[in-house]
Structure formats: structure tokens, C-alpha cells
Amino acid sequence: MNYNSYNKLSAANDKMASNSRGKGNARSNPAAHSHVFPSDNRSCRNKSDPADDTTNQSANPVPAAVPESGDRSFDTSRSNSLDSSSAAHAKRHTGSDCRWEAIHLACCRESPLSLVHFRLLKRLGYGDIGSVYLVELKGTQAFFAMKVMDKESLISRNKLVRAQTEREILGLLDHPFLPTLYTHFETDKFYCLVMEYCSGGNLHSLRQKQPNKHFNEQAVRFYASEVLLALEYLHMLGIVYRDLKPENVLVRDGGHIMLSDFDLSLRCSVSPMLVKSSSVHAGANGVEKGLVHAAGGISQGCIQPSTFFPRILSKKNRKTKSDFSFKGSLLEFNAEPTDARSMSFVGTHEYLAPEIIRGEGHGSAVDWWAFGIFLYELLHGMTPFKGNSNRATLCNVVEQPLRFPDSPPVSNVARDLIRGLLVKDPQKRIATKRGATEIKQHPFFEGVNWALVRGAHPPSVPDPVDFSQFRSKEKKAPENAAATAPSSLPASVAAAKPKTDTFEYF
Image (cartoon, rainbow, N blue to C red; front, side, top):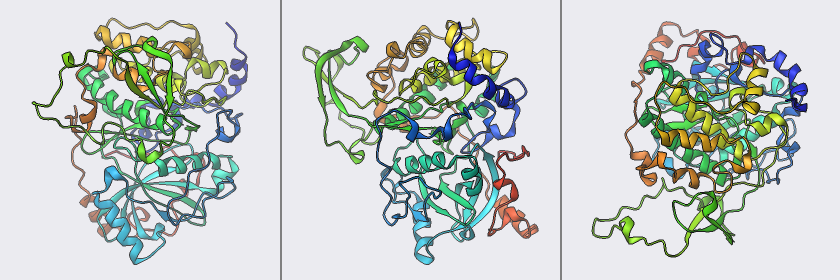
């Protein structure tokens, strides 16, 4: 079968030969252990699509994010400026985080913050629009991950809009499984985002350490439930992620996850609705048409997933399943951005949805396709449609049926969920209409207490990081640029294509 989009992609695929997920290529690259962005070895971003600019999308536009207090210089016209220095307000779910206090005290002493206030300790990784460093805020013993983007490179490569989109999105997020933006600033040469540091690497590197390089089903259920809640929250805000893969799922020091990398995300409008469903276990056909009520007036601050406020009831007041007769319809909250539509070709070859490859336009359903690929890879240690080349992979995604290997054994409910997510017609794909609610009700997640996911015990907890090693290095070699706070960053930061030096992940 021939597709017009294939001709368009051939040249781009030839240029991206080094971007494949081939054996011994991307997966052996040390940047796969990066903090905020992995290397681009698995990414396919169509160079003919101007900057992957969300202003070129046909989705319903959303006004630019309202700047944080004091951030009035934010350029909503998306010119050659990203924003000026600004410290974000403490987010609700991290209100007790000592790093907020450290940022606040530093701003009180000397504002605005800049590179001279941070000590660069270690380069963690790099991506298409910048590099990430482990940094320490001077005089506080507070550690962060700083994403550094070269202004000249962003402008010359037409990537400024992507950087600005990521900054806007990070400023909106307030969720336990999504990044926290503590502050941001710019220098003459760089844009800098100061975010949470995750010491546990990413799920790709963690999967490689598992027996036979795949997780057991219990571990997959744990990680998938947290990723699902993060995607649900993003969709509530009208954000289509478009870059889900194990490399972008970071592991915090407590073993819980955090999604990263939002420069490919699509922002669009979303209309929260209350849908009357015949049963909490109803499928996509269980939603009664014509009984949908727009939940007008719901603001970002009102949208709180169940992980924020768990209901703790005494045994006396708890209701059992038998107490719910389901004789009447149940109200179901739905905030899926179903009207989102984009023609951009962005993402990772093995995770691209068929509608993206065909060039038919895509919306939020691409995240649910990627979620299915994500589950498959965690369970089997490989993706289902990988070919010998990028072009072969794209053809397989569109043409080949889904198949499961005989080993390792996977439960029927897991296979059923993956089949529902990897339906090639996005209109028939599970969660396309009802969002994460439909996936939560699938038997694969039976027993998951969605209100208490944050309290669940992780399958793996990273070893504590000994930050004193950096102080000892600083004493031995204070002239080292990585051990001091320079006025400018190493030349490798400014390069559009950083060298693949070895940066061990401790």
C-alpha cells in the first residue's frame, strides 16, 4: 500500500539514519540515561514541518499561558525571545518541598536569579533543543536539573516556538507525576529552565537492568497507572503529549515516575463535560448519547485528579459494590480534547500512531496509541512494529496486524488492553472518546486504588545519591568549569548537535 506521506518522509528518514532505534545504536547511547531529554536516536521529527509550530495546527487555539506573577515580559507573539527571569509559585502538591524555600530565599537575597547563582555539577543528557545539567543553588545544598537552550541555535534552527511551548506547559503543571518548574531565566546566550532532578534515570535504562530486559506485569501495572494519571491530567489541560516512550519516563528518588520533555506537545482547547454512563464498567458504547452536560466554569485550579484528595472512610461508612445498584446513570467526568487536530509529523518512529504516518491529521488519540506501545515494550522488552529501517517500521505500523510473542507470557487482560489501545482506526481506539476513565475501568487495572496511587510501594527504589562527591571534586579541581558557576556554559551546550561524550548516570 502506498501513502503520499511516505514520499514526503523518505528524505527526512534518510537524514535521520542515526535516529533509529537500531540494535547497538540508540539503545547503547549513554544519553539514553539522560534526565530530561534522551538523545534523538529514537526521535523522528520531520524537518519539512516548520518548527513543529503549534501555530500551524488546525486545532482550536488556546491563548498563551498566563505568565507567573512578575513575569510580564513573556512574549505571547512568539518572537525571538522566550521570557525573562522569573521564579514560579509553589505548586500545591509540592508546597512542603524545601527547594521552593531555597529558591525563595535566593530570590530575596539577590533577584533575578541567573547562572552565577548555580554551580554546574554534571551534564545529565541532551536533546534536540538543549542540554540538561545537575546543578546546585549556591549556599543552599538544594539540587536541581537545569535545562539549557542556546538562543542562537534555537533561532537558526527554527526551534524557538518549541522551546516556548515547553516553557508555557511547564508553567501550567501541578501534578505529582509531572515536572515542577521552580524558576526560569535567560542570559545573553541561553534560556534556562530550573526543574526537579530525578536520580533514578528513566524506565528505558531501568528496563535494561531487569531479567530478560522486561518488567513483570505487577511492575508494569504500577508504572502504567502513574503514567495514565499524568496523561489524564495533561488532557484535562488541553495538552496532547505526543512523546511518550520509556526514555521520557523518569524515576524519582522514591521510585515513582515523572514524565519529561514537552517540546513536541500540542496545546488545544478542551471542554470538560459530565457524561451520564450506565455503569462505571461501561465500555465506549456505555455512554448514553445526548446526556452530556458541559461543565462550564471549570478552571485549571479546579481540575484535580483523584491522587490529590483521597477519600478516607471508616469501615462503618464504606460502601460495597452491592450498595451500588447502578439502576440509574452515573455521572462521569470527561475532559478529553477530542477536537484537537494537527498535521505535524512528530514523535518517535516506533511510537507513531497510524494517523500521523498517513498524514490524515491527529488528535489526543495518538497518546493512547503510544500508551499501548509503551505497555507492550515494558512487558515484552521490544516494540510491536519495529522494522529493519525507519521506513519499514512506519509501513509495519500502518499495515501489519498486532502480534504477541509466545514469551514472556502475558495475561489475557493485558493483551486485551493493548489490543484496544493499538486499534489503527483512532475513532475505534479505546479512550478516544472517554479518555483515561475508560482505561482505568479495564480489568488490567483491577485492584488499583486510583486515589492512593502515590502511596503504593514502587517496584524499584534508586540508591541514594551521594552529592558530597561533587564537593570533593570541587576542592581538588576548583578550576574545573563543571565544578564552578561560570558566566557562560561549555561550548558543547551551544552546539546544535552535542558530542556523544560519555556521561555516566550515577
